[in-house]
Structures are given as structure tokens and as C-alpha cells.
Image (cartoon, rainbow, N blue to C red; front, side):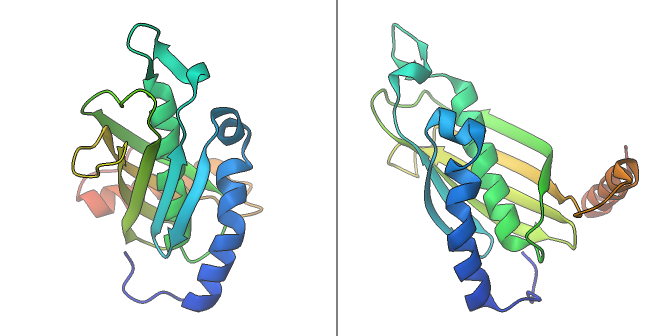
Length: 177
């Protein structure tokens, strides 16, 4: 994460605890899936997805479908990114990789724990795991990159190009817009 945040930490924590439930449960897809805010701190977020029979992807095994786990991880990663960046502005998911390791246990709540391990001025790099009670035996892991969308920005292509350049610089490669 960033070495020295440019905001008051106590004030930021208070703001994060105020907005995080809206970021999680207040979004249409979050509400539809039943996502629940658990915790937030600077660069970290925890969100849960209680077991829901409506989200079963395989009627034989009663396992929730992978798309719900993807949405859970994306939301947790986004909240961790927001909690790490200087400004509390809208975010866009630039890259999201999910590795599924096993099926979630039917009937169990799935918990996503995310942390931002690097934040630049506009881009946040996040890792997360989803588990159903044992973080040492994850259901899935995620790695994501988020870009902060500046309020009032009218030149979205310039924002996209700048994000691609930032990612390329961080990865040591060349930019693709």
C-alpha cells in the first residue's frame, strides 16, 4: 500500500465505516445477492455472502454458482481499493482474475477478505481470498486492479489510457489502452 497516506487515518476510518455498508448492501447487485458488509480498514475489506438457495448453481450438490463468488470478490476488492486510495471517488475494475480452488460448502456463508497491497495516485492493486470458515482452505482467490474515476471527468479515453500506462509502469511492461 502507499507508504504515507495523505489523509487523517482516524477520520478516514470513520468515513469508511459510514459508506462501506452502502457500497456493499446498497448496490443493486449486492442487495440482489444478499452481500453483507463485515469490516473495513485502511486498504482492507471483509464482505460475506450468506448461503442462499436462490444462488444454487448445481441442484445436485447444492453449491452456490461461481458468479456469486466472483461478484463477492469483486465487491470486496473494490472496497479495499477505495479504502486505500486518497480520494473516495468512483472506481472501475480494470482487471480481475479469479482462481477457483474448490466448491464452497453447501449451507455455509462465504467470506471474502481483501487487502490493497499497492496504491498509486489513481490505481489500486488488490488481493483477496474467499473461504467458508477456514481461511487456510480457500474457495477462491482473486487479484484485481482498480482505477479511480475522477468526478466530473469528461475524457474517459484519456483516463483509460492513463490507467493503462500506470499499470504498464507498475508491471514493467508496455501499455494497452
